[in-house]
Length: 189
Image (cartoon, rainbow, N blue to C red):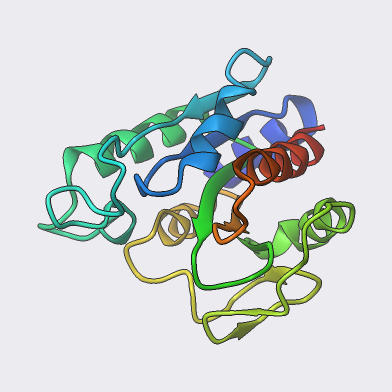
């Protein structure tokens, strides 16, 4: 039943959810997400962690989704909002301080779409990320995403997802923001 609704949603009306700011030290995603706030069929959940630090009270918000006894109201609210919207795709925006290129984790049905969106960006594409090799910047079924991440929670619910990671070591903040905006724009068009 849920799968039938998802197929109908994909065929008739595309709805997208953009999530940003799970990590407070990754500001480019929040700025990019703001650009899409008033677009039709796009719902933005942004600036979730306002601490300017990776963790809130010592907890990584993106490691406790569906973590029985350890998830917070924040994660439960995000999942509830997403489930109510039954989106065609959830796009999660992040920055990576350990990898020098752009890469994305995505559900398998989105692999070719995400590859295409990454093919025309100005920043370098990562060849690997955290032990996973990329296929033109895309990772499907890799070691990551880790248990407790939003991606794992979405996969469990059969909700298509794409997590975009830009390298935070690029000093030009606006270049990182523009890269994220470009990729998201191409994903939702």
